[in-house]
Image 1: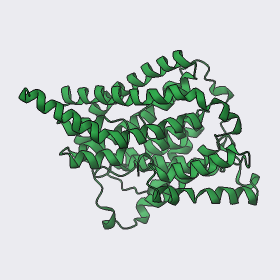
Image 2 (image 1 turned 135 degrees about the horizontal axis):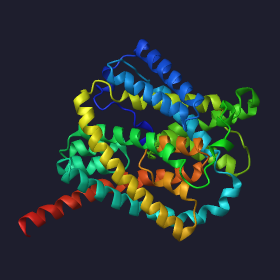
Image 3 (image 1 turned 30 degrees about the vertical axis):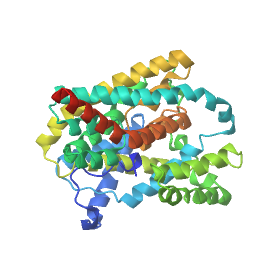
Image 4 (image 1 turned 90 degrees about the vertical axis):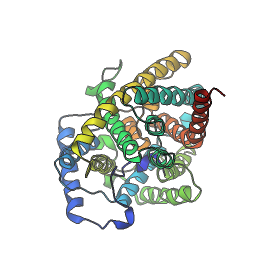
Amino acid sequence: MSEPHETEPASAPPRRARRFDWPAFATAMVLGTTGGAICFKLHVPLAFMIGAMLATTIAALGGVRTMVPPRLRDGLVIVLGIMLGASFTPSLLGHLGEWSVSLIFMAVYIIIGAAAGTFYLRRFARYDPPTAYFTAMPGGFTEMVLMGGASGGDDRSIALGHSLRIMLVVMTVPFAFQALPGYDPAGRDWSLHGLGPWPWELSLTDYAIIAACFIGAPVAQKLGIPAGILVGPMLLSAGLHLAGLTAVKPPGLLVAAAQVVIGASIGGRFQRVPLMRIARTAGIAAGLTLVLLLVTLALSLLVHLLTGLNLAGLILAYAPGGLAEMSLVALALHVDAAFVATHHIIRIVLIILFAPAAYHLWRRWQERRATGV
C-alpha cells in the first residue's frame, strides 16, 4: 500500500492495539465537516479537504483526540478512484501519446528532487544519510518509513517529514494555482452539485456500475499493485468509460465526504507528537517542500515548452503530494484528473521499485569515496 494510505499517525501504536474510539471518531467528523463547510462557504479551493485538515490539525495540536477508521478512508478512496476513472473519456485516447515525454520526465523529477532534498536535509537539518534520503523521496509514504527504518534511519522523523510535506503541499498548491494564467474562479460552480451529480440524479444502473468498480480494490491489492485501493477501482472505471459504456460519476456528496475524511486523516497524524518536535520538523519540512516545489516548477515549465502540455496540469502532476490528495486537487480545480493521477501512479511505482536499490548504490559510493578505494 502506498500514497492513498498516507494517513497513519507518525507516532501511532500498532494497529492491533487499537480499539474503535467513537467519541474521537465523532469529534473528527464534526470538526472536519464544520471546517470544510466554512471553507466551502468562503470559496476556498479544495474546501472540504483543507477545512477538515486545518480543523483537525489545530485540534490535534491542542490535545483533542480524533480518529478516522482506516476502513472508512479506504472506502472513500475507492470512491475517489471511481471518480478519477470517469476522467478517462474516449476522447482521451487520442492524447495518450502526448503524455510520453512528461511521463519520462517523471523519472528525472524523482532523481533531481530526491538528490536536492537529500542534500538540503544533510546540510541544513543535519539528518543522518538514511533519514535524509528516505525523507527526501517525493512519495511512497508507507514504504519510505519502513525502508528508512530498516536501513537505520529515524522512522518517526521520516513519517513526520512526509506527513508535513503532504499537508504543506495541499495547503499551498491550490492557492498558488489561482495565480496561473487562465484560472477563472468566477466561472466555477461553487455549489455541492459542482462536485458531482446529486444522489437522486443517478439511476439504479449507475449505482450498480459504481458498486461493481469496488471489486477493483481487493483485486489490485491481491495482485500487489501499488496504491491498489485507489488504482484498482480507477482502472475498472476507466475501462468502462473509455469503452463508452457509461459516463457515470459518484455523487458530489460522496466526493465532499471523501475530502472531509482524507483531510481529517491528515490532521490526525499529529496527535501524540510533542509540539516542539512538530515545530522543529515543520520548519525543516517547509524548506524541503520549497526545494521540491522549485524542482516541480522548473521541470513543469521545461516540459510545457517542449511539448505544449497544459502547465497547470504538469504542476499538479509533478507536485510532491500524495496520489489521493493531488487527485482531489485536480478534481477541485478542474484540471485533467486522468493526466494528474496517471503521473502520480507512475511516480509511486518508480519510487517503490528503484529507491531502495538507488540508496544502497549511493551508500556504497560514499563508502568507497571515504576509504579511497
